[in-house]
Image (cartoon, rainbow, N blue to C red):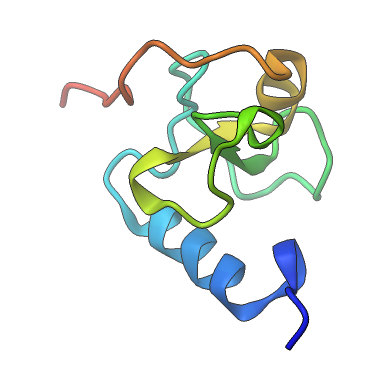
Length: 91
């Protein structure tokens, strides 16, 4: 059976899981809220960020190392390693 990667069911389930977390709609890079109103690939839209870059051996489907991020923040982050824990907003 071929791997489906980012188009497979397991990846879609992981995205939904991260979005359902309390920190799911807060960017793990800049700490700002992420609006669901932006179209895909807009710099302020939601994207799944892997805290361990895939290019450095990170797991595509590890829920413990996946967070939500702005598409622009995630893209500019590149393959550098994440050091901060997920940020949450104080209510």
